[in-house]
Image (cartoon, rainbow, N blue to C red; front, side):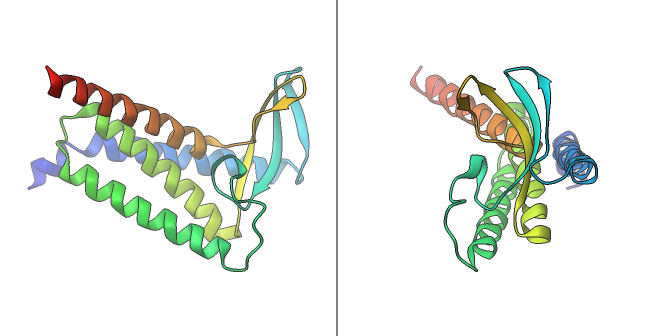
Length: 165
């Protein structure tokens, strides 16, 4: 039994590093920026801008106004985190791409869940843009979730390809 969990330590560490990096960067933003304050990092391309997001990734659902929205989004995130953990534990620890994807998703989900439970919103600060087009602001947790989802998609396609051959 111990060896089963020992093989999962690298993924646990990845999840914890993701969570800690997310919390650390958000705490820096909170302590050094005022809300909506922005500094240019790369002119006409990248700013660090402290904003809050009451929706989900990239501001989806942020326009919905409901006193229960934060609670429902937190509950959804918590359930999703449990599903990721269960799926991870039921999948082979040796399936590295899958486990890295799930650890990234879980670390990011827990980072944003912490914000939502603590503040009722998520702290975002990475702002990319080109001319008049602005990508919605995001954070380390969103990046980890997005990366994990891409890796998961690659894993699914890879498995489908192997199943057909």
